[in-house]
Length: 181
Image (cartoon, rainbow, N blue to C red; front, side, top):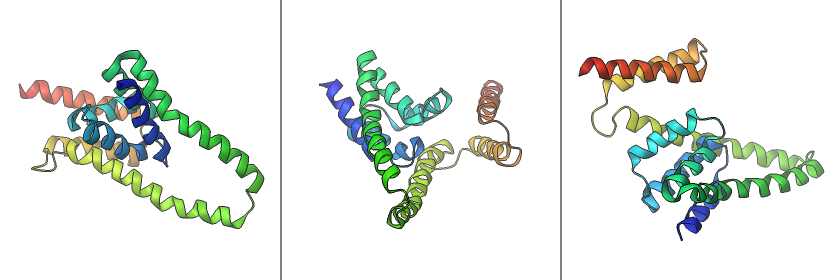
């Protein structure tokens, strides 16, 4: 039963995730935290971090991780197949249709109207990760706010590699934890 639940939950996520992995995060959170209660919100935040740090698409990494945690290797396979199956079908159909009708102004107009919705989904995913990281709701964690601002400066102003920024802020937090004991 759990295999079918994993497959169907991630099939829904895969079918409704327009805009990539980060846009899928609110949908994944809804399914795995709110609907099925497979993990807590704190675990979800960790899941996002782990899924981002490991190679590969973030939504597929999340599906594999949740499936493995809930039902072992077969659960990981069920969740991962559920997540990628809609994309495989849709991309194949779109590729066929796009090559046939790519010059139609109607098609170009539809693609233009989807952009704001994708931006909104990505923004929502960012908020879902940011708010618990800095301690909201409630009082903000000052140290987490400092790491956030530092990471933002390193990424946007100094153009550092994201992996280096993640490792560096992780090491800084580890040092801060050791010093505070």
